[in-house]
Length: 375
Image (cartoon, rainbow, N blue to C red; front, side, top):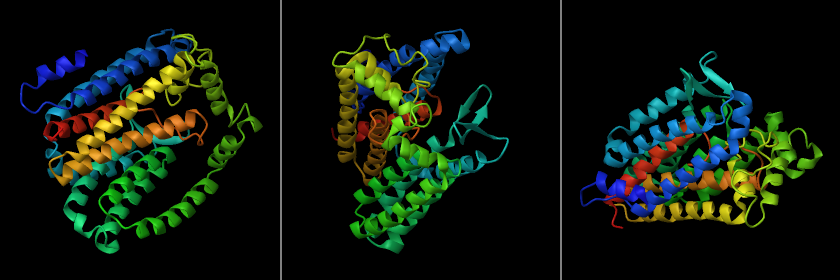
């Protein structure tokens, strides 16, 4: 609860942020730091001769992210309303720059990063937040036109598809799906007609099928999802090792630090599959505790959105909490084998730079909205 006292000291005003939401975020960060170390020290010792390599970098990202969260928590959320077009334009420019050969860095088959010294940024993470900010402004101003396909629905759709298209050129289907799903939630909540979504769904299904067929590695992921044991050393390897981690965890887990799968069985367990190690070491109880924290974050985030003082604040809060929730659902679903591997990190917990930093900045905006909400 040290975070609660920190927040009280930072805000000696009437408008104190939602302390429950802040405590949940800090708790997730603490769990994340512990599990990043526990899941990575074997690989870090082997590759870098330093078992704290990933932990030290994670703490650095976390420190920058927390400073960003505090800054955004203090900055009135309406400030972003004035600069939403500039923010969105900058995000589109970054998505174009990352596609330039020699500038964009490729990892895992996707050219999604821009190197800056010893670190790198992922423009698609900026786009998720930037598009939420702009769409919140657009919907708050044009909500009365949202039932009209041409005046309200189509302009929003063009922006979403433009961002999705640039992300798919990298390609990064997982991030594209999170961004699109988040925006669809915002547009639907604004009052868009179900008939428009039905037609969009048909087009989306055909397009999604085309994206899968057009890339052999995506077909491999689908077949590996259906029957991972058909290619246990190839495309089915990750999901099999993830299930081998979650299954033996049982009720209580093997104990913190006692994972077997992190010994070079599960590739880079500190990233997308960190929940596998949580299930293995902390068991069903530990996994349920983490899911419970995310559920509490969702509840408080929705409450902030419902009680926000204006339409812009409502849509902005809804967009942020939807983005986080959708990402959590996709990541955990992948880990337990419910959907194919997508390459999506677990918010607040997975090792990473841009993802963790932008997630914390988004949380800071949500906390700022809570300062003005009627909670």
